Length: 210
Image 1 (cartoon, rainbow, N blue to C red):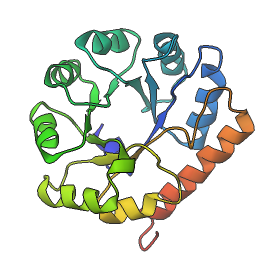
Image 2 (image 1 turned 45 degrees about the vertical axis):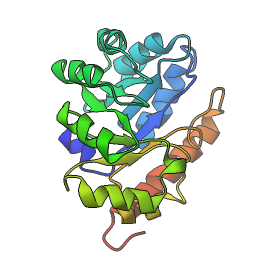
Image 3 (image 1 turned 30 degrees about the vertical axis):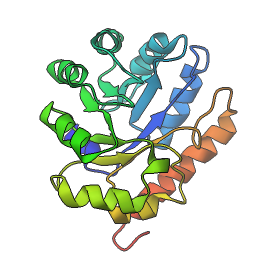
Image 4 (image 1 turned 180 degrees about the horizontal axis):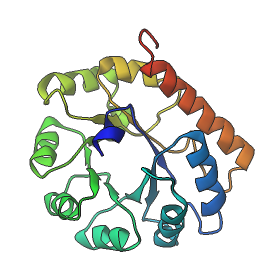
């Protein structure tokens, strides 16, 4: 977990992923270098898609669920082999259960109050959501008051072009949705989008880059 969160992690958000699509989508993303894959639970077949991705994941990769709103969701994802909690909100009981199961916990927050409560519950990092309402200036303000080692990951409207501004403001990683994956996307288009995000990530990790 620490290794992933210390290297400008990119979480691929696969909203609407079908069981049929899961094998080729997983293959493209794992080959491109994505090691954190999230399948939101608010679509049919999400748990089975998680199982498929878990079975094909390379060593060190983590697959998990998104839009996890309850303890039941945590336990369902865990039973499917998922080891990551991502949510749009903060719920202390949900985060604590994920931590008890040794899952990577990335709850959604939008205020300092939520952020500190999430950290107190054991969150490993904070999903800043929705990022469209939290421009780099807001991320910079949060960074100034939160513990310096807290991973901050904007989610919502993230593209290769706006990552640098967030990193300069103090972001440590990103959740990437529609700019990377949409249901029925062609493999070639997915491969290109994945390569663009990985190239932006590599540039930002290079001294003086971005």
